[in-house]
Image (cartoon, rainbow, N blue to C red; front, side):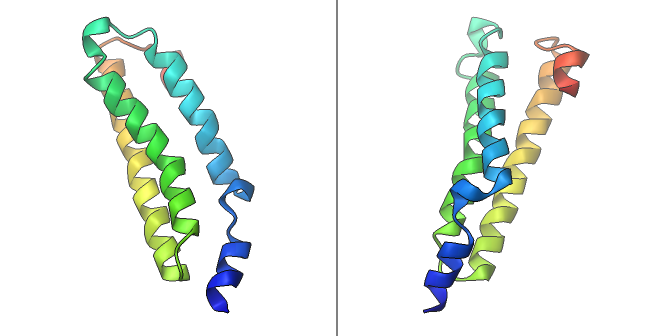
Length: 104
């Protein structure tokens, strides 16, 4: 069955992009611990959710039945990565992070 082949070929735990997403999540949590407390339900929450969604969406996409569905989920994940980048730029603008943290 074709869907079984896709699932075997796209085990999310073997994908480097999913592994890198896990590293990003840890970094975002570490960085946002230093944000002002009044951002707990603002930028902190949004950044954390966006970072988590990158690898979560990749994992979800590998469970779909077709390559096209997987590609759609990978595109959604890319959108979440842009959201993280945008929120980090805002965090830089607000001086919650510095250039060094942003560059890493």
